[in-house]
Image (cartoon, rainbow, N blue to C red; front, side, top):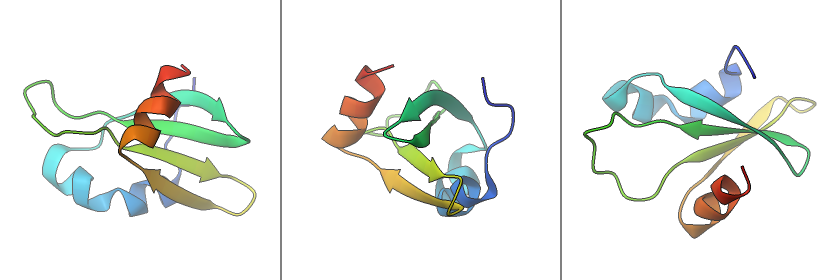
Length: 76
C-alpha cells in the first residue's frame, strides 16, 4: 500500500482535486508504473474513472480515462 501520492500525479489531477478533493487509491503496479485511481465522492455522477500511471524513474504521470481506465482497474 502506497502512503503518499507523487507530486507528478497531484499536478496532473489538480482540476479534479479542486472540484472533488484529494482522494486516490493505489491500485498496484501496471506495466512498470504505479497505478493510482482517483476516487470521486460517493454521490458523484462522473462517467469514466481516472487512472494515473506514475513513472518514478522519470518522475512523470500520465492520465488515463475511458475504456482503457476500466481495463486497468479490472486487473486489480
